[in-house]
Each structure stands twice: as structure tokens, then as C-alpha cells.
Image (cartoon, rainbow, N blue to C red; front, side, top):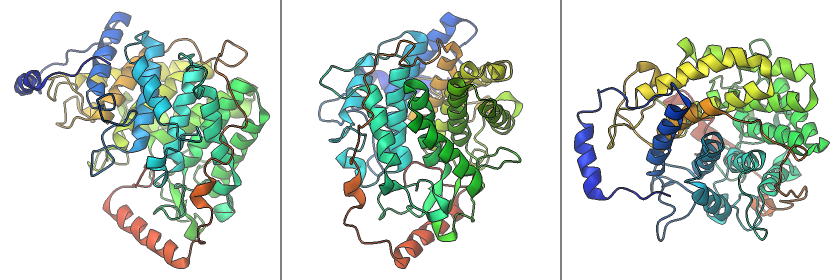
Length: 457
């Protein structure tokens, strides 16, 4: 990775930024060269929040989790996925060594992205974000790891297999994954759209990549459950956040988050691309139509459930980048969406860079793109979102499969038994456990728009 600025230079930039906050943005996306230059600077600025390549630090993660830093484990996995897309779309390999080192370091002893340091607080969505980044590496032909290291496709399969294990499925609410993995975790009694959306996304993409029908069977099963439980509103195609098993998931929290829409829309697009089934085409188009109406008012990305009230937390600050990246790939997988999606993503990306006029460098990005002004708050999530919006303007060749040039080695049995120790020999969840988790849930829901689409407590 390119070196960090020394403190003396940073101090000078802080002074300079005081006069730059309300100035014009130095970024542009009006040509391919401009996009590449802008994305390069955005990526460099984002990586200044990363410390995992310093002596004594932990590779792969951003500083945290709280109180040791702002970021939870999952966000590191999301950042490497953002940089894999950045590499594929811009051709800049500056961070490839960091991507390789980080994603290999965090695989865990069972090679399924359940490292010991984070397993006890693991959410299904946390693990899945690392798995989706590994699968992205296979799909975009990111350099394969050395032969003695876990391979990208096998890592994604391992994550999928641990999440398809009977240990993680039960009859509560008629099926579906819990938000959390260990039964003792607060939030285990919540089943939500992002955990199931990531699992659906992995299944759809693994099916397209390998042709193995087991993956598509799980994708269909997950989609059907989302409809049945009511988290996917068939009249509007809104995707709601989730519900509690103590209420048979009938207490649906109807907060909508852009990444829930995006992760399901991209999965549906991959299912259509693999099957040519018009049912999946219709589902993709309806999700995208709802997503554009809901999360891109006036053509600019807005995180509607928290942005207006100023209640977006660190996790939510990343979501806009995901929906930009995923929608750009949807336009490849389902070409009928391109004419609608492309101009809105371009307008939103242009708005995202306009407000990048703050921070220590005088060019760092805030979160409220639609305001046209820097909002005074910088962070890895804000940079990640704008980087995703800008770099996806250069989206290149469609993701490959095993039959169209993919080189990553797979293992359909990877991850077998990897997480069984989490819930083995644990006492059954008692009424007291459920009530305790329910009280926490009520308190958190009362203090913000919604916190139950988040990756970690």
C-alpha cells in the first residue's frame, strides 16, 4: 500500500482543509481518465483509515470494534470487495497485495471466514460479506492465492456451506437464517433480510459460477421464505428489515435499507442470467424499479431510513456504495435495466463527489450527497461509498464462470462442520434469554429508525 502521510504533513493539510470545506470539489467523472484519477484518490484516502499493514496490527480489519475503534469486523470484508471491484474496473493494482494478505489472514482455522477473534460475536451477514468478496475475486479473476492457501471459490463455498448447515436453520418463523450465529448473542431471536439476502446472493452467484443446482435450490428456497414471512412485500417489492422469532416474525420492522434491496436485486439478476427464466427477470426489474424510486429520490442516493433524521450509524454509511456497485452489475446481467439504471447511477456518482471537500485533506467525503455540501463527518464508510459510486462508472466485462474463463479452484465440501462448535453443547435458549434479547431489541428500536439491519450489535 502507498505510505501514510507523516503527522507534520497531516497537520498542514488540516489547516488547509479549513478553507476548503466550502470550496469546489477537485474531482470529476466526465471522462474515463477523470474517473480513474478520482477513484485513485478516493481509494488512497479510504486506505488511510486502514492500519492492518502496520507492525503489530491485525491484517484485514479496520480499527475496532468499539470501543477500540469505530468499525466492526464485517466492514473490512466489505472494503476489500470494494477494492476488488476498483482493481477490476480501473486496472489499478496498487492495493492487490493488501487485498490478498487481508482476505487470507481472516479466513479462520476452518477456512470459512470464522476467525476465532470474531466468532463469538458473529452474525450470518458478517461472515457472508467476506464470502461475497471472496466470490467476487473468483468472478473478476483477481489473482489466485498460492496453491497452498485457501482459494477464492472454495472460501465462498465454505461460507455458503456453513450457512446452509442444519445448525443454522430451524422452524421458527417457518425457516430462514437468524441474524446472529451463536444462540447466546443478543439479536439471535431476530431473523432479518440482510442475513438471508447475503445467503441468497451467494447461492445465486455460486449457481451461475459452478452450475451446481444445490445452490439455486437454496436461492429459490430463501426467496420463497422471504415472500411467505412477509419481509418481501409482493405488492410494492419493498424489502423490510426483519422480525422477532418470539413473535413468529409477525412484528415486522418495516424500515428499508438500500443494501437489502441491492443484495436481493443482484442475486435475482444472477439467477436470471444463469437460467433465462422470465420470472427472475421480472423480479429483478421490480426490485430495481422500487430501489430507484425509494433510494434515489431526484436521482441521488439517499439512505431513507436514517439519513434525514441523522441516525445513520457507522455501518449504514457504507450502504450507498454497495447499491451503486451491485446495480452496475445488474445492468450487465439483465440488460433491460441498463437504460434506466445507468443515467441515475451517473447522476448520483456526480453528486457524491461534489461534496468531497472536507477532512484533513480538504477533499474527503461526507455522507449527505443530495445536499451538495460536505456534512462535516469523514470516515472509511463515507470514502468506501463514494469510491464504489465512482469506480462503478467504469464497470467492465461481466463476471466470469467456470465455463467462461474462471480460474479459481473450488471445493463443494468446503466448510463442512466449520461452525458447529458455536452452538454445540450449549444449553437451549430459555424464555429468560429471549426476554432479555427482546428488551434490548425494544430499547434499540426506540432510539433510532432501525438498528436491526446492521451487521453487529
